[in-house]
Image (cartoon, rainbow, N blue to C red; front, side, top):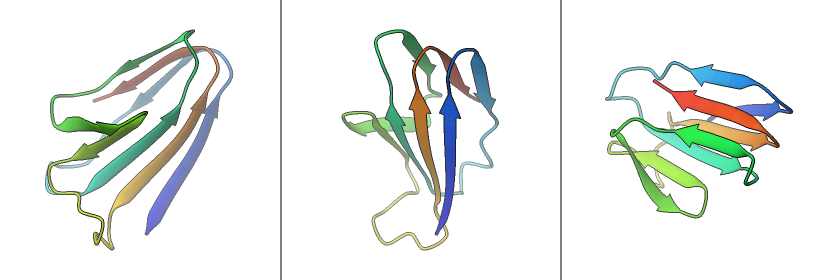
Length: 77
């Protein structure tokens, strides 16, 4: 798979998502000082977990975002 790890201490992180056909899984380890904006295409699947409609556990080509945020904003577009 393709895992993208990111860490935000403070500030804004804007992530431009690929097309809707791409399977995307997002894991966010955040604090109460963090704000996360998700597009409607990503559905909450668990605590800090979001997945696109085309994502399944067997998706081999999935894009996985593993993000650590202490304060700031994460915006997915």
